[in-house]
Image 1 (tube, rainbow, N blue to C red):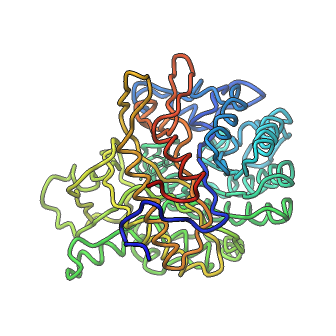
Image 2 (cartoon, helix red, strand yellow; image 1 turned 90 degrees about the horizontal axis):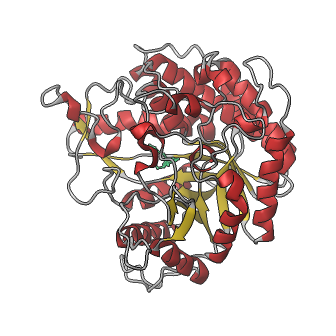
Length: 480
Ligand code: PNW
């Protein structure tokens, strides 16, 4: 038997998929090519003061032109699956609130060529349909706060599923609707940069609806593919489990981040306590009769993105308000993502942090996978993102020696195994990220890649972590 906490040599189940993940706006560049029209991230990144150093995704990793090289790199590393996202503005660049508009064949051709390249390399494609690059034209008519955005998303999903569904193993409807809704429409640190709590809650519902419509469309147009969604669930612990105030604070944030998505998607219902907590912000009248039956679609898999733990306490209003939401990188923004949580404080945890300022605790990985296994019986699980930002430590050999990242990956993979041992049906793990890339509001200042990218030359160089991860993938076990 294994010694708990002694990861070296521990084996993963047969067939466990070792992958890496990226997202379109973060790596593709070529924003004006192939008929693509602007997304909300083009607009946001070009707005002064929104993204660190004024960085944009105009070039990024130039993956649009270098995808064959990037697939060859994955093959060299022995990776078995690749999670990427499709940029909606490449597929239906003329979409409006009322009509999907013509399909841009050049957009489909790009992703189709990527899928073929992956299959030829023996790598299973996992396609995210929405990783935050909403067509700007849809934001101009209200964005995710408008119901028609969800309707158009369902139609767009049908197009992509129809074009790629014969070759793609897994379709993921949405990436992290929490970020899309609350960081985009409440705190404003992500595109479109709005700070309107009522709009953010409408966005939550319309993203749920979009998920349901897209899941249905994928089922119909890609019947052999798995249907999944990716959520960034939070692992929230009360600072003092014996304090009723702290326990209630944990309930509140769990409702807003986790249950407001899990409830509708898995059970077709919104949590009553969330509706009550937010009643002063919105009356939820954007939830129409029949919507919840659409949101609740049979799922083959749920993807978990996990990076960091959270501890909360009851906030009595004393102390520095700048510290209230400030722990773990949610940042001092114009607004808060924590709607109707004036009495909740995020506790700054001791111990190591990543370069994002995010605390590290792999136990959250185990806890969330175990929870998902209980809440979604019969549904497969994937870790669709996990990884860490770390500054480059470049050796004389020109290679990044990222021992901290190796330790992070090792400990989180061991935590995945702990969940497997407890019975969670975890089928694969996708490291975030294959490449250093455009880290949203932080621009190129934060590097999550297991492969280093020199943005001046676009040269890719595997870091020590990529070699370590390749060994783990090859062995199907944590390297000794
Ligand atoms: C996720 N937060 O984003 C995304 O899916 C990736 O595109 C991103 O690069 C990665 O994690 C690393 O940040 C998040 O503030 C952004 O809690 C912000 C938060 C969480 C996830």
